[in-house]
Every structure is written in C-alpha cells, then in structure tokens.
Length: 304
Image (cartoon, rainbow, N blue to C red; front, side, top):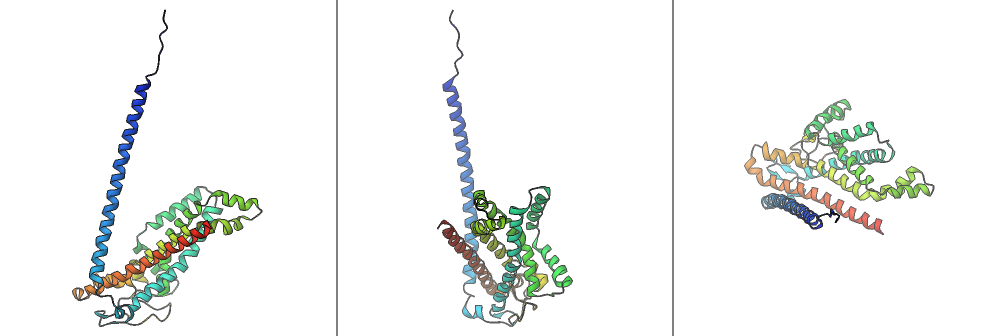
C-alpha cells in the first residue's frame, strides 16, 4: 500500500503572503497620499495667510513706523513702545520659565521614582499645557497683581506668561533628556562621577538642542498671547517707553487686537493693523530662527 502524504500547499501559502503584502503596500500608499495632501493643504493655507498679511502690511512698515511714538490715538506715528514692551515681557517670561522648567524636567527624568505620584505630576503638566490662556490671565491677576501687590505691570505680565509657558518647557526638556542614551550616564558613573556630575557633563550638553527648541517654542507662543497680558498690565495707547518693570506697557498682540476689533476708526487704521501683524510675525520668526541656529551649532559641537 502506498502511504498518503500531507504536503503543505506551498504555492498557495506564498500567494496568500504576497496578497497580504500587496494589501499592506496599497494601504500604506493611500495613507502616504493622505498625509501629503494634508501637508499641501496646510502649506497653501499658511502661504495664503502670509501673502495676505505681507501684501497689505508691507506698505505701512517704515523706519518711522518702527521707531516713532504713536500719535493721535494710534492713527498716526509708530509702534516702538509696543515692540519694546513685547521684548521686555518676553525676556521676563524666559527668565521666569526656563530655569524652573529645565530643573523640573531634570528632577522628573533623572531623580524622581517612576511611580503613581510622578505619573500624576506628568499628567497634570500636560493638562496645564491645554488650559486656555484666559485662565492664566485671571490667575495672574489674583496672584501677581493682587496677592503679591505687583500691580498691573511688565513684571506681572511676564510672570503670568512664564506660568503659561512652563508646561511646554518642562515637557520639551524632559523629552530631550529621555532621548539621551543611557550609556552616557552609565559611562560617567563607571568612572566614579556622581549622578549630578554625569547629568551636568554628559546628559545636559547632549539634550541642549531639544531644550533650546522647547524653550523658544514656549517663548514664541508667549510673545503672541493677548489674554494673559490683557488683565496684567497691557495698555493700548501709551505714547512713551516703559520706565520700569512696575509700569504699564504696550504690546504687539494686544495692540493688534484693539486695532482690529475695538478701535473707533477701524477702516482708517487697518493698514497699521496689518503692519503690526507683520512686525509680530517677523519677531516670532526671528525667535524660531535663533533656535534653529543654536540647535545646529550645538549639534555640530556634539558631533565634533
């Protein structure tokens, strides 16, 4: 008698696997096409907005517009106080948020135990990043303007924006620290260094590009915020430069908000509003370009 053999249907198995690969490949191609389409739509929308702002605002931008004081209820003159006020508030924001955010990220990533408590802290930080800016403005009024008696001032506005950017700074800095290979820490510890020495000499220099990126992103967001400074010290028309950190100030985002929606001669000042928007965008782009240059510099330094 001949023995019956159960041989696997090899061609059928190969055909089935090939069909699955083709289906996966087709799905990937569709996903890539949708992603490219989304990217093109976003780029076209941004390009249209930039064209609209530049074409309508470039005519208002001049040397006098950038260096002169406002006149006649901001229907004439320049926006120098608003530019300097924005720069001052942004500097205070960076000084208030960057050191605290970086050290908090170092503690959470390098020292804190990974338990339920630290997970709750991280969740709270990420939730704070999504809180509307108007809530930070009201909190700044209660804490800095009234409780600490700082009044409506550059300092109150800068500290409020510092709280606003703190969650972004902490999250970005922690992600940059996580990206550093564990071998960097282990190598330093094997040579007899303390944990802080290994962090200071190996981990932080390697994480600097990511930390700088997060810092600039947070500060750039703060530079364009209106609601937090609306209650903590911003004024629409102050034809003078701020005398100290305790004085009120003009700022580009609040100035643009009033000229676009609340001014008594909106049609007359519309070109000035577009010019202000163009200057604000240029300031934010300059901050981001600074971050890119610093990141490239530190990456080259690390590779060297």
